[in-house]
Length: 268
Ligand SMILES: Nc1nc2c(ncn2[C@@H]2O[C@H](COP(=O)(O)OP(=O)(O)O)[C@@H](O)[C@H]2O)c(=O)[nH]1
Ligand SMILES: [Mg+2]
Image (cartoon, rainbow, N blue to C red; front, side, top):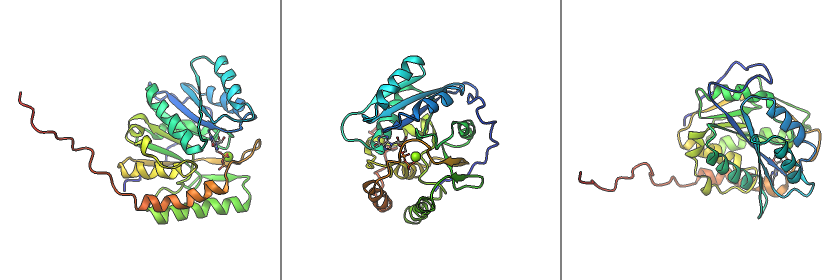
């Protein structure tokens, strides 16, 4: 396993994200986030060299149409993907990250739409990609914190992380954080089309695949603030999938070595 924990001096909140010619595409999945999207969009676009890909699952509250309006107001900086078919956080991320790779963005981030993931942490996460392939915005490493979560939710998250680490052997302290930043090359090595999770367990499955690929994973502390507007979509069905996924990952057979593509000797 190849996990490093990077501690990077955080640039001032809201400071420039650009690190010598880099740009970040932030993939934001939305389901009923109408009240949160304008604030999030503004805060992200205030950062230098940041673009957004909103992946909406036909939100009944009109989030998709609102995202289209925002895209019209900020040409070239916001793209909207309107999904059809069954909804799900994992499905949305799989589609959104695949699209992000197509754009050629050198750095690809992912974050929740409800402002729990402060855009001000993004510069430190981007900086950490200088020596990591995947940077996790972490509530559980030194300096990380959670605000405004009920004790029950805190307990659920803490136990979930212990459980995931125990079953899968992952060493990352915050395996369920949805705030991440990938280098393009690293993300391209993950077989998105083979990811099985429909819901939130996507995050654990992706982390597992990243570690198995030998990618360097770093954690950067974040302060997670529970949403003030809208509702959580965490459901019993999502929790059940999340409880089973670590076991599936533990016993997932390793793919036959793909690196050796020897097809014989071609005469010159
Ligand atoms: N596209 C899409 N986004 C979703 C879905 N479920 C949740 N989300 C988004 O995923 C993010 C995290 O969801 P949230 O309900 O806040 O989860 P919590 O923070 O764990 O309570 C938010 O941006 C949601 O809008 C879904 O089925 N499809
Ligand atoms: Mg949330």
